[in-house]
Structure formats: structure tokens, C-alpha cells
Amino acid sequence: MEKLKPSGIEWLRTSILEMIQEDALSLGDKLPSEKVMSERFHVSRPTLREALKLLERDSVIEAQQGKGRFVSAGAMLTIARPITKFESVSEMVRSHGYSAKTRILGFSTVPASEEVATALDLDPDSPVLRVERLRHANDEPLVYSVDWIPTHLFKNGEQREADWAGSIVTLMAEIDRRPVASTAHITATMLPDMPTKLHGLENFGPALLIEETCFAEDGTRVLFAKDYHRGSAFSFSFVRKS
Image (cartoon, rainbow, N blue to C red; front, top):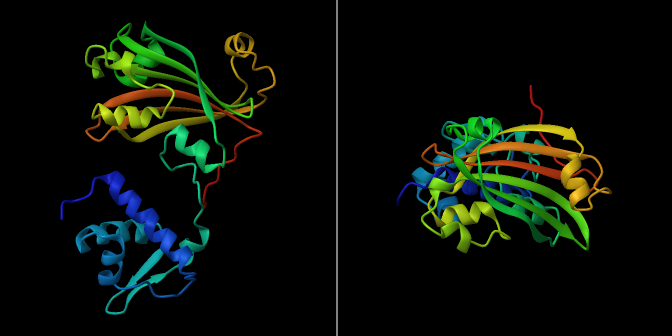
């Protein structure tokens, strides 16, 4: 079987975690055999072992020579939506139980500012696509986002024909530039004055701003994003271990 891409290994890792929860396995319980798990998840044993190694590294499971693999203390610390998990804003909004709609607030090609050029490893003033959006549910704003994407990633006209109301991660996958990882900076802040006044977001309140540069599998920088998550609508978690 062909080796899974990192995103596929991450899916398998998550599936094993879900299996531990669904089968009510607790500290010290033995995991099913490699044969049983490879058949359950329809993957080869070498692929399964890659995902299991990730769980061993995170102290979720422990391998005992000649005996098998067992649930360890780290599994008791597993959280559903870790802030370190890479996912699209659309996925994150759905994971919090919202059925959100997206409003396109701005869509244009602009010269990259110094900040954007640095984030995307471009020359200053290089053309980038700027997409400004607002996700909302029941007329309540949830996430205000601004995304910058290098225009050279698109063929002629592709960006104008794309559905920018959907997931940008999915859209980038369609042009073979799917983001699979990012570096992020997180701060608590308020919305900038201009979009607040321009789009009537005075009641948005405090926000958690996630600024991230997203990378495709080959290491290409494909997206720089600023996502303001409404503080009263979202919460994020993380695990601390010694």
C-alpha cells in the first residue's frame, strides 16, 4: 500500500484515539493487535505503525516488548479540539456546533505589504490576492478573517472562478496547493477599527487572533491569514505535560 501523506497519518492517529474512546479503553488496557487495527482502518501495518509511533511519542500508548501496546497516562489527557491541531476555519467553526454562513467583504489583488511579503517569502509589492470574509450564524458574527494568497499559484482566471465562500483549504487543494501545516501566533485583542466601523461589528467584543502562515506539503508558503475568533463564541484547549 502506498505510504500515506502526513495529513493521512494524522487522520489515522485521530482515528486510533477515537477507537480508544469508543471502546472505553482506560489506563493499562491493551490495544487490539496490529492485524485487527490494520483491518479496522483499512491500512497496511507499516502505515499503522507510523501512526502508533506518534501516539507513543505523545505518551498516549506504551509499547511493551513481546506483550503489545497499552493505553498510558497521556490518553487520559487527550482533548477533542487542541489549539495545536491544524484545520481550516470552516472545520473549526463546525466543530464548535455552528452552522455558519460566509459573507465576502472584500476580494482584490493588492501589492504585498512588508508584513505579508515576509510571511509568504515574497518580494515586497508582489501581487497577492486579498480575501476578507465574515462567518456568522443566526445574524451573529463569529469569525472575521483576512487571507492573503500569492497570485502566481493560480492559473489565469482560476481565482475569479473559485468559490471563496467555502473552505480556502479545500479550494487550495483543488489547485494542488493544500495547506498541511502552519506556524501561528496567537493574541487576545479587539477587532481593528476600520472593519469594526465599516461592517457594523461594534458588538463583536474581545477576540482571539490567530495569525498563521500555511505551508503546502512541499514546503511552499501558500497562505497568510489573520482570523479573529469571537471570544464569547469559541474556546480552545491544550494539554500540559511534564
